[in-house]
Image 1: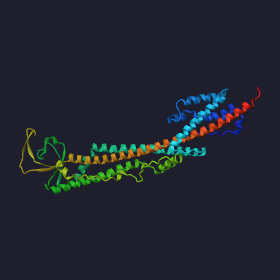
Image 2: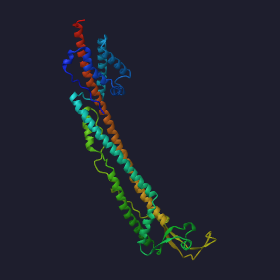
Image 3: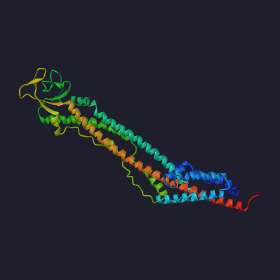
Image 4: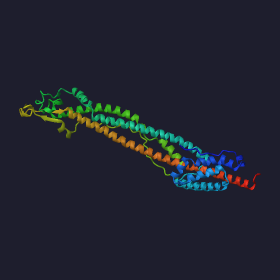
Length: 396
């Protein structure tokens, strides 16, 4: 937060006091502010003063506070240091395009900056939290689909509603050979088609894929709508305009950064649902023509039955893997899009953070210049008072 510069509000009657009294009531508070760690760090960080300056300034303040016989030379040295820092601040301000402000303008802009900074900090925290929430939610959906155990239950339910031309069979020791399957397929589920007509089988698979797509679409829409609600940050145009306006007030010549805010609302729930129907090139891996056989020696050898006897099967496990892969690709694609969105928004927030830092520097430069202006005025008054006392010394 900005440190409000100290404004001298003492009555001009204080000039009539002793030099020591004047220095304590007017000058010391100003120079004490300038010598604070916060101000010194700002000046050092921006190469306005060297690291030796703070020690020198502290020594001069101690000498000024004592008000000893070296008061005149102390004042001269303080004037020299203040002028030097003022020139360096002016050069830095010119480099940044900072407008010289009155104390009233500086007060108003400092208040405006603090209010805007609070809004920005709140927005940045909200954006980070909502981005993390959506990130975790999408990652959870991807992981859920990679290891989903519910897909087979859904597929089994869909198959149960299909025509009687297809049968769902659990492979066991009694039927594996009649189905033309090896023994290691025991315990797996297979679709067995009564028809050998490829077109009928294709229509049946299209129906199963379409039914699964409908179930997936409803589930995905609910999941993504919930996540869309958790991610609020889409680029706050109002905040952007306020930042830009304040930046121009402080540094009219500073370049305007275009952060390319999105004005449209991005919704992941509007993504197109993928097609789960197997493509032609995927058929050979799913639909198999098998020949029943007679197992010998515990299935190590087999004797084929009549050559013309064949069965068309489809592995439910492979069909579920097919559906699972498509679902994973869908959520993984959204996850990647969301990651790009988060990166883009984080970049915008980072740019705005740098703008706030630049505005902070500009304000701090002007605050220090205001302090130094008042300090130089007080030093001049102190020098005049000291000169008058030397011309008209009081009674010993």
